[in-house]
Amino acid sequence: AAGLDHAHAAGLVHRDIKPANILVSLDGTPKLADFGISRAGNSRGLTMTGATLGTPDYMSPEQASGQPVDYRSDLYSLAVVTYALLAGEPPFGGDSALSIAVAHVNQAPPPVSKHRSDLPAHVDAVLARALAKNPAARFASATEFVDALLSGAVGAAPAARPARAAAP
Image 1 (cartoon, rainbow, N blue to C red):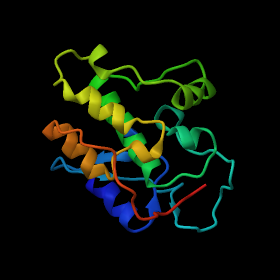
Image 2 (image 1 turned 180 degrees about the vertical axis):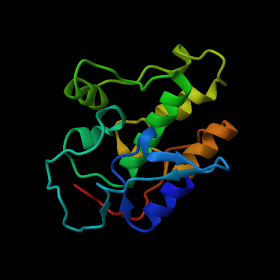
Image 3 (image 1 turned 30 degrees about the vertical axis):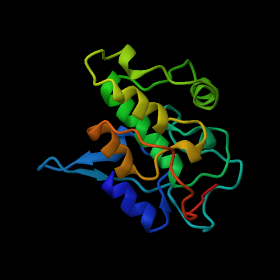
Image 4 (image 1 turned 90 degrees about the vertical axis):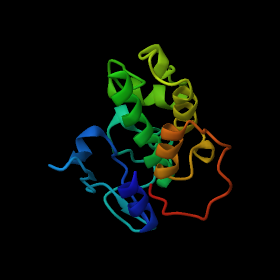
């Protein structure tokens, strides 16, 4: 979460947050890796509006539908990674990348408590907010998301935030 917040503060949107891109050092410290499809601000790169890059299992609804993305897309993907860590699988599955992407856009994720009844009750609410289809309803930062998971305080939807880097 701290690494993702650091990247966002620098204007970078990762666009491919998934377990394979979170490495753990020998001392147990997680490190965010593979910024190969990241985007900085309004830079021009390998993609254009309407193009979709990333891993469907962890893709935000706006990314899956080819819409412009910002830091909140990464926050959604981090929530999908968290869901998968807790449940043993991502919230959406399917026979194809397209069916998974469509589920991210159109379906509410099942509560993680369906997979893990031993989790504290607030975890479902925290993940529901982090996996909101509307980016404005998500947490304001990755650290805020993790703090809510650890503290049990879901809080209100974030206030308007300063514009951050958008990447198509």
